[in-house]
Image (cartoon, rainbow, N blue to C red):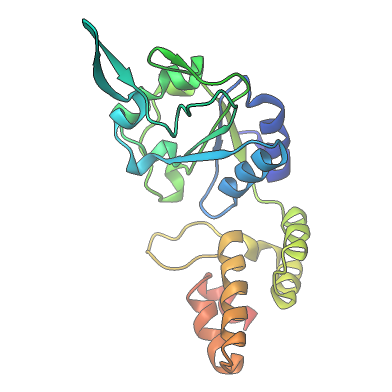
Length: 241
Protein backbone atom coordinates (compact mmCIF):
# COMPACT_ATOMS: atom_id res chain seq x y z
CA UNK A 1 0.00 0.00 0.00
CA UNK A 2 1.13 3.55 -0.77
CA UNK A 3 0.26 6.89 0.76
CA UNK A 4 -1.53 9.01 -1.85
CA UNK A 5 -2.07 12.72 -2.45
CA UNK A 6 -4.57 14.66 -4.55
CA UNK A 7 -3.51 16.78 -7.50
CA UNK A 8 -3.76 20.00 -5.52
CA UNK A 9 -1.69 18.52 -2.71
CA UNK A 10 0.89 17.36 -5.26
CA UNK A 11 1.02 20.86 -6.74
CA UNK A 12 1.67 22.44 -3.35
CA UNK A 13 4.44 19.92 -2.60
CA UNK A 14 6.05 20.58 -6.00
CA UNK A 15 6.03 24.34 -5.41
CA UNK A 16 7.59 23.90 -1.97
CA UNK A 17 10.25 21.25 -2.73
CA UNK A 18 11.03 20.99 -6.44
CA UNK A 19 13.79 23.60 -6.39
CA UNK A 20 15.79 21.37 -4.05
CA UNK A 21 14.38 17.85 -4.46
CA UNK A 22 13.45 16.01 -7.62
CA UNK A 23 9.82 14.86 -7.58
CA UNK A 24 8.25 11.91 -9.43
CA UNK A 25 4.45 11.79 -9.76
CA UNK A 26 2.95 8.34 -10.33
CA UNK A 27 -0.67 7.53 -11.13
CA UNK A 28 -2.94 5.86 -13.64
CA UNK A 29 -3.25 7.53 -17.08
CA UNK A 30 -5.46 10.53 -17.67
CA UNK A 31 -5.43 11.94 -14.15
CA UNK A 32 -3.90 15.32 -15.02
CA UNK A 33 -0.32 15.01 -13.78
CA UNK A 34 1.20 16.93 -16.70
CA UNK A 35 -1.28 19.79 -16.36
CA UNK A 36 -0.64 20.17 -12.64
CA UNK A 37 3.13 20.40 -13.19
CA UNK A 38 2.68 23.09 -15.85
CA UNK A 39 0.19 24.96 -13.66
CA UNK A 40 2.56 24.87 -10.68
CA UNK A 41 5.41 26.21 -12.84
CA UNK A 42 3.21 28.97 -14.27
CA UNK A 43 2.14 30.04 -10.78
CA UNK A 44 5.80 30.20 -9.76
CA UNK A 45 6.70 32.23 -12.85
CA UNK A 46 8.90 29.49 -14.33
CA UNK A 47 9.09 28.42 -17.96
CA UNK A 48 8.23 24.72 -18.26
CA UNK A 49 10.52 22.71 -20.56
CA UNK A 50 9.36 19.16 -21.27
CA UNK A 51 11.17 15.99 -22.31
CA UNK A 52 9.21 12.85 -23.19
CA UNK A 53 10.85 9.71 -21.80
CA UNK A 54 9.76 7.53 -24.71
CA UNK A 55 11.27 9.83 -27.33
CA UNK A 56 14.77 10.58 -26.05
CA UNK A 57 18.13 8.83 -26.18
CA UNK A 58 20.93 9.00 -23.57
CA UNK A 59 22.83 11.55 -25.64
CA UNK A 60 19.77 13.83 -25.53
CA UNK A 61 20.51 14.11 -21.79
CA UNK A 62 24.29 13.95 -21.56
CA UNK A 63 24.88 15.93 -24.75
CA UNK A 64 27.31 15.31 -27.59
CA UNK A 65 31.12 15.70 -27.43
CA UNK A 66 33.16 18.43 -29.08
CA UNK A 67 36.90 19.09 -29.13
CA UNK A 68 38.08 21.87 -26.83
CA UNK A 69 41.84 22.26 -27.20
CA UNK A 70 43.43 18.92 -26.27
CA UNK A 71 40.29 17.56 -24.61
CA UNK A 72 36.74 16.61 -25.48
CA UNK A 73 33.82 18.11 -23.59
CA UNK A 74 30.14 17.24 -23.71
CA UNK A 75 27.74 19.93 -24.88
CA UNK A 76 24.35 19.51 -23.19
CA UNK A 77 21.22 20.21 -25.24
CA UNK A 78 19.75 23.71 -25.00
CA UNK A 79 16.42 22.44 -23.64
CA UNK A 80 18.22 21.09 -20.56
CA UNK A 81 20.73 23.89 -20.16
CA UNK A 82 19.60 27.23 -21.58
CA UNK A 83 22.16 29.87 -22.44
CA UNK A 84 20.98 32.23 -19.69
CA UNK A 85 21.01 31.57 -15.94
CA UNK A 86 17.27 31.89 -15.40
CA UNK A 87 15.71 29.01 -13.42
CA UNK A 88 13.02 26.98 -15.15
CA UNK A 89 10.92 23.87 -14.61
CA UNK A 90 12.36 20.76 -16.25
CA UNK A 91 9.48 18.31 -16.70
CA UNK A 92 10.46 14.71 -17.49
CA UNK A 93 7.20 13.24 -18.73
CA UNK A 94 6.74 9.46 -18.94
CA UNK A 95 10.04 8.89 -17.14
CA UNK A 96 9.12 5.30 -16.11
CA UNK A 97 8.68 4.49 -19.81
CA UNK A 98 12.27 5.49 -20.62
CA UNK A 99 14.81 2.76 -21.32
CA UNK A 100 17.46 1.80 -18.74
CA UNK A 101 20.20 3.79 -20.48
CA UNK A 102 18.04 6.92 -20.50
CA UNK A 103 17.10 6.46 -16.85
CA UNK A 104 20.80 6.09 -16.01
CA UNK A 105 21.59 9.29 -17.89
CA UNK A 106 19.23 11.14 -15.56
CA UNK A 107 20.95 10.04 -12.32
CA UNK A 108 23.20 13.08 -11.87
CA UNK A 109 20.47 15.39 -13.11
CA UNK A 110 17.94 14.11 -10.57
CA UNK A 111 20.25 14.03 -7.57
CA UNK A 112 22.85 16.74 -8.18
CA UNK A 113 21.12 19.03 -10.71
CA UNK A 114 24.11 18.47 -12.94
CA UNK A 115 24.57 17.61 -16.62
CA UNK A 116 28.13 16.47 -17.15
CA UNK A 117 30.31 19.41 -16.12
CA UNK A 118 27.42 21.87 -16.01
CA UNK A 119 25.00 22.70 -13.20
CA UNK A 120 21.38 23.67 -13.76
CA UNK A 121 20.57 27.31 -12.90
CA UNK A 122 19.92 27.75 -9.17
CA UNK A 123 16.20 27.47 -8.38
CA UNK A 124 15.44 25.17 -11.32
CA UNK A 125 12.73 22.58 -10.65
CA UNK A 126 13.13 18.95 -11.71
CA UNK A 127 9.78 17.16 -11.84
CA UNK A 128 8.99 13.82 -13.48
CA UNK A 129 5.74 11.94 -14.03
CA UNK A 130 4.61 8.57 -15.27
CA UNK A 131 2.21 5.67 -15.02
CA UNK A 132 2.41 2.48 -13.02
CA UNK A 133 2.90 -1.09 -14.25
CA UNK A 134 -0.58 -2.11 -13.10
CA UNK A 135 -2.12 0.53 -15.38
CA UNK A 136 -1.23 -1.48 -18.51
CA UNK A 137 0.64 1.55 -19.83
CA UNK A 138 4.06 1.53 -21.47
CA UNK A 139 6.15 1.27 -18.31
CA UNK A 140 9.59 -0.21 -17.65
CA UNK A 141 11.10 -1.17 -14.32
CA UNK A 142 12.41 1.87 -12.48
CA UNK A 143 15.86 1.15 -11.16
CA UNK A 144 16.44 1.27 -7.41
CA UNK A 145 19.17 3.85 -8.02
CA UNK A 146 16.65 6.17 -9.68
CA UNK A 147 14.01 5.59 -6.98
CA UNK A 148 16.56 6.58 -4.35
CA UNK A 149 17.16 9.91 -6.10
CA UNK A 150 13.59 11.24 -6.14
CA UNK A 151 10.61 11.96 -3.94
CA UNK A 152 7.80 9.71 -5.20
CA UNK A 153 4.24 10.97 -4.88
CA UNK A 154 1.39 8.58 -5.65
CA UNK A 155 -1.44 10.75 -6.96
CA UNK A 156 -5.13 9.88 -6.66
CA UNK A 157 -8.22 11.34 -8.24
CA UNK A 158 -10.42 13.56 -6.07
CA UNK A 159 -13.97 14.14 -7.32
CA UNK A 160 -14.54 17.44 -5.52
CA UNK A 161 -11.28 18.86 -6.85
CA UNK A 162 -12.15 17.76 -10.38
CA UNK A 163 -15.67 19.19 -10.23
CA UNK A 164 -14.28 22.53 -9.02
CA UNK A 165 -11.74 22.45 -11.86
CA UNK A 166 -14.44 21.48 -14.37
CA UNK A 167 -16.67 24.38 -13.39
CA UNK A 168 -13.75 26.79 -13.77
CA UNK A 169 -12.79 25.36 -17.16
CA UNK A 170 -16.16 25.35 -18.94
CA UNK A 171 -16.70 21.59 -18.86
CA UNK A 172 -20.27 20.92 -19.98
CA UNK A 173 -22.84 21.07 -17.22
CA UNK A 174 -24.35 17.66 -18.06
CA UNK A 175 -20.93 16.00 -17.58
CA UNK A 176 -20.42 17.74 -14.24
CA UNK A 177 -23.91 16.69 -13.16
CA UNK A 178 -23.26 13.10 -14.24
CA UNK A 179 -19.98 12.83 -12.32
CA UNK A 180 -21.66 14.39 -9.28
CA UNK A 181 -24.36 11.71 -9.45
CA UNK A 182 -22.02 8.80 -10.36
CA UNK A 183 -18.66 9.60 -8.68
CA UNK A 184 -17.05 6.26 -9.58
CA UNK A 185 -17.42 7.10 -13.27
CA UNK A 186 -14.74 9.79 -13.09
CA UNK A 187 -11.93 7.23 -12.99
CA UNK A 188 -12.05 3.60 -14.05
CA UNK A 189 -9.24 1.07 -14.07
CA UNK A 190 -7.55 0.50 -17.41
CA UNK A 191 -9.22 -2.50 -19.12
CA UNK A 192 -7.16 -5.40 -20.50
CA UNK A 193 -8.41 -4.59 -24.02
CA UNK A 194 -7.38 -1.44 -25.92
CA UNK A 195 -10.77 0.27 -25.60
CA UNK A 196 -11.79 3.70 -24.29
CA UNK A 197 -12.09 4.00 -20.52
CA UNK A 198 -13.18 6.76 -18.17
CA UNK A 199 -10.58 9.16 -16.79
CA UNK A 200 -10.69 12.88 -15.95
CA UNK A 201 -8.89 13.53 -19.24
CA UNK A 202 -11.42 11.45 -21.17
CA UNK A 203 -14.41 13.33 -19.69
CA UNK A 204 -12.78 16.68 -20.45
CA UNK A 205 -12.11 15.49 -24.00
CA UNK A 206 -15.73 14.33 -24.37
CA UNK A 207 -16.89 17.77 -23.25
CA UNK A 208 -14.71 19.42 -25.91
CA UNK A 209 -15.97 16.98 -28.58
CA UNK A 210 -19.60 17.71 -27.71
CA UNK A 211 -18.88 21.45 -27.91
CA UNK A 212 -17.30 21.02 -31.35
CA UNK A 213 -20.16 18.87 -32.62
CA UNK A 214 -22.69 21.39 -31.36
CA UNK A 215 -20.78 24.30 -32.91
CA UNK A 216 -20.73 22.44 -36.24
CA UNK A 217 -24.50 22.07 -36.15
CA UNK A 218 -24.50 18.29 -35.68
CA UNK A 219 -27.63 16.97 -33.93
CA UNK A 220 -26.42 15.86 -30.50
CA UNK A 221 -29.29 13.38 -30.21
CA UNK A 222 -27.64 11.40 -33.01
CA UNK A 223 -23.95 11.99 -32.27
CA UNK A 224 -23.82 11.96 -28.46
CA UNK A 225 -23.68 8.17 -28.19
CA UNK A 226 -20.93 7.83 -30.80
CA UNK A 227 -18.82 10.48 -29.08
CA UNK A 228 -19.39 9.11 -25.57
CA UNK A 229 -18.62 5.51 -26.53
CA UNK A 230 -15.49 6.74 -28.30
CA UNK A 231 -14.16 8.53 -25.21
CA UNK A 232 -15.19 6.80 -21.97
CA UNK A 233 -16.00 3.32 -20.60
CA UNK A 234 -18.95 1.70 -22.36
CA UNK A 235 -21.02 1.35 -19.18
CA UNK A 236 -20.48 4.99 -18.27
CA UNK A 237 -21.21 6.09 -21.84
CA UNK A 238 -24.50 4.19 -21.84
CA UNK A 239 -25.61 5.62 -18.51
CA UNK A 240 -24.51 9.14 -19.44
CA UNK A 241 -26.46 9.07 -22.69
